[in-house]
Image (cartoon, rainbow over all chains, first blue to last red; front, side, top):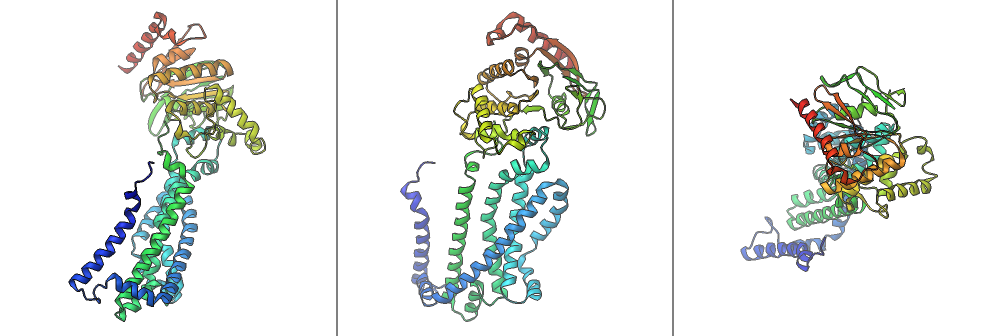
Length: 258
Length: 253
């Protein structure tokens, strides 16, 4: 890759800054009612005044998200390997998983609340339920798309299915797996915030819904921005891990072979 | 080494039927034929990946009942693992096949040396630490040949290994294969649709017909060895290629 030019490197910051400047300008010039849309300056003010609860609730959201995500990774990898292992299991489980995945998870939260009560557990479980699917699909795809010729080479040598999975399937599935983590962490985040908004005593979602009922719009938006920052940070972390762990996949195109 | 197939069918379509093929130990046999004539089925039968529905397959006098383990295989695509270095790609079969499998971890250095020697033999000196994507298609195919040979198989099965390469690289690799064969002395079954390749490399060329696949003609190539690439332009060689060509067009009628 050629080194990015100054313009390219600064563009992400310039655009973000520009967006806020534009927002502020619109609010000032048209005198937008702060109940409808608070100006960034008001949001900053709210952030400074309420930094303590903001930080505490951000931490709570982060915790539920990561807990749900961790369960999703463990569960997703195991299920993905089972599904990728055999075509029969793949065919059997696929409709169930697609059906489950297409249920909006908001609809599941009330059930979780009945089962586990209001609090952290529904948030963790919602984060888990919403985020395991892409991990399963990606791990299974990575395992199931091993080149048949390579499999022949190894099988002719007397390799068992387990050998092929260990030597070829798992390394081959890694880029798919790390790629799916990026998607899964953002989904887990959505899941925990949705659950917190509906039924919780802590978390940014809870903070926002309380602030909203009190018409503290700048605080609601401060919560939104805190969410965005957390989301970007976690996405960036997993994108970085992806780059570091599977560098070979970015250099070579799969299946090129020849 | 004897390979005898009386017939086989797969998935409702009879791919190979009444196919008789004998390859002597240490011989270089080529199988040519129109596309879809069951050449790949032949490969899978001989290595025990597919069981015949009728007939008998024997390698080294023993009937093939399952994966033969003594065969090395290479295909049109090099199929190297992109996360492994060239050396580790070549070593892959040793991590699978007995008795190396058990000894592999302890004698890694010894095996690595063996891989490096083999790589040097095909002209890949000093590329052991590189990754597949850093190599050209021809070099990847050389690596694939090394991987097929690292466990010193008695039988090398090649399925159009040079088909995806450009003409010059292909001829270069013919010579690489010729030299490896002359030096190590394994048995080769080369499946190809390149008649010049078959005539240049093989002792015997077998012509297959399509649906159901069977051997319709066998022709011994009695050109003296060692053969140089120039032999391709001699009238004798050209006659052989013409003869093979006419037999294939008969088959295609």
